[in-house]
Length: 360
Image (cartoon, rainbow, N blue to C red; front, top):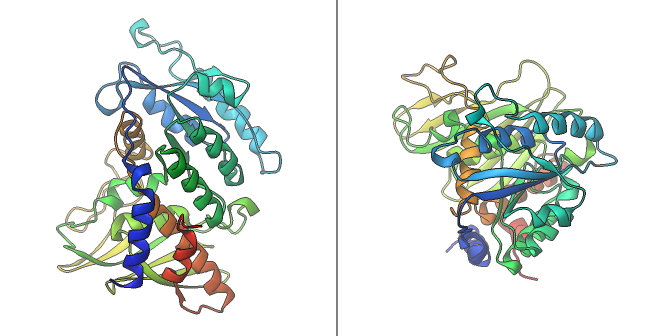
């Protein structure tokens, strides 16, 4: 067993109890939102609270929210007020009375929120707040989804999952890009076959708030994992004024890259290399290419794919993205930072990942 497999196995064993705990609740599952200055608070509630919900969205509903803002995150107060109003108006005053949905209650404390719900979604825009928020939720035994990012640092990501394991409470986080059909559908795509490499590209904000600088490339890195899966063993990274470049090597010799676009046109997609062919991936929010043609006039799904996974999770399904995989992504981000500091040197991920296990 190579070092990468040893690290992965250690993480999987350490988190097995956390990831396997199911939230089996009778009747409708009541969801509370902690922090609403992230647009995800509105985007996912729109799906979970749909009138006459069917299928995956039936039996789960957001019932309350605690609007708490970050004092030093840009526009947090302004965005909180904006999304609060949208949440209060969501699915209200329908033309058909049968489509009436109970309004979301705004509460004044975490204790009040926890008393009204069976599970929690954290949508505080400032990832620095997530460790303290998640710790309180997990110690209350409430299954937890944390909107991107899980945390602002790798160390805080470990702290959150440590509490989840100690309390045996399921917890996970994900970017909506992971569940965009144009990305996830590239695994074993008929034009590609088995994936042996992938070049992902997306935006890299040069004006990102300090709180977001570590997790800035998370959407695109999760896209890379959606197509390639986990197993990275080494990373190198370098950048210029126009782009940031990250190269990751998997334990089986596969190579994936991420181009962070700093200037010029920005799109979120990828080129996928496989055993039977090479193909562009779909564009975020749209489906996979058909015979090399990327659809753009199909139904835009955006947040829906992740919303489905969130609903399934709160109704008792397993954690869709394991803590081990999420921690590997944070290790990759940290390795990329170290590589940039070393003028693009290759950084071995297993040595870094060992610091992110639950072992004290």
